[in-house]
Amino acid sequence: MEDPKEKYLMETYSRLPITMRKGSGSWLWDTEGKKYLDYTTGIAVNNLGHCHPKITDAIVSQAATLVHTSNLFNIENQSALSEMLVSNSFADRVFFCNSGTEAVEGSIKLAKKWGAQNGGRHAIISTEGAFHGRTLGALSATGSEKYREGFSPFLEGFHFAPYADPEAIARLAAETSPCAVILEPVQGENGVIIPPPGYLRRVSRICGENDMLLILDEIQVGMGRTGRLFAYEHEDIKPDIVALAKALGGGVPCGAVLATENVAKHFTPGAHGSTFGGNPLAAGAACAAVETILEENLSEQAGRLGDYFLEKLEEIRQKYPKYIKDVRGKGLIIGVEFSDGDFARDCFSVSVKNGLLVILTVERVFRILPPLNTNEEEIDFAIATITKSIEEVISSG
Image (cartoon, rainbow, N blue to C red; front, top):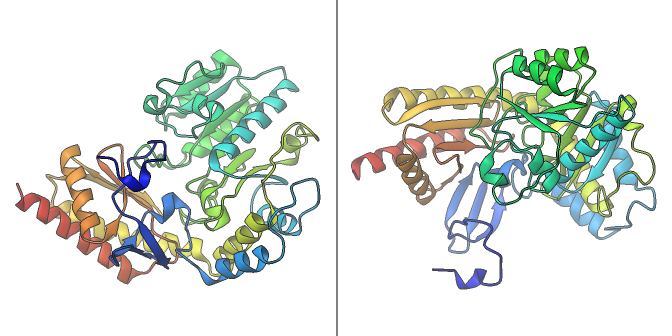
């Protein structure tokens, strides 16, 4: 039965029957006063938890000063944020937008613009199981049929290789002469799939050998989540383009396309744009978020806490090998894969009842995305809650 409070909304979400009223740090409270440990972080958006004082102060101060002007003018916060991102990444230039799918769209357009000037190439290699967004361009690069169903025809020229198989990319490159490869360093939406060490390095080499751009979708894993500010840093490579969003704005919609000068120069005035992208409010919040991650070494902390979390989850897996197939992760993007989808759904429901919020992905994987500034005590609560929920589901038959 439809919730009367939702009667005017399009039914694009399967929402939990919970309305959140306030948040603080790693915790949320609903309208009934129930408290939850939020290890969804707004789907990897709230990397500093809820209502972080530095982000809150930046938003309040900027809202009282200047919210929006458009990119017809220079924007102080945008200039500061772009300098911060360039100084801490491979990039020379930044384009600001509002969301992850816009960042992917911008990355695709930039790659095609570059390809038009480098042999007239437009094809792009993506990977099976990939999720890059919901607009038609991003869907064209998405390698998961459940998101694509009913929206064809897609943009032509996209080819798909199995994830974590660099040689398949090399074969496709020889067959299709693409301008770029786009992939996620970790496939989050597909169940937290971690490629083997050296995967990105090998793909980067293949791109160089075939004069292709390497586009990395770091929308979910960028901004410290994997234990480095950017996930590509684990492989010590230099991509050509990186798409960012989610955690970049600290909870305010903010996306970005980062690129080298050699690629970015193909975006000339009028080639691309965004009315809201990088406006004073969004860029001000993002400056506060990125500054905090850098100053407090939260990337390093995410790596340490991720190791601790995985160690504790592995103990649960060993205790319940019949029910848990695998635990995996990189920093604080973690997956717990159950052996059975029905059991996973039951555990998910009971975990929510017991005060823990995670994301159920691909019907059988808990995708766990704690704030980077969580702590061992909160992780211990999550471990105890998952254990309790498993035991309750087992005992219920």
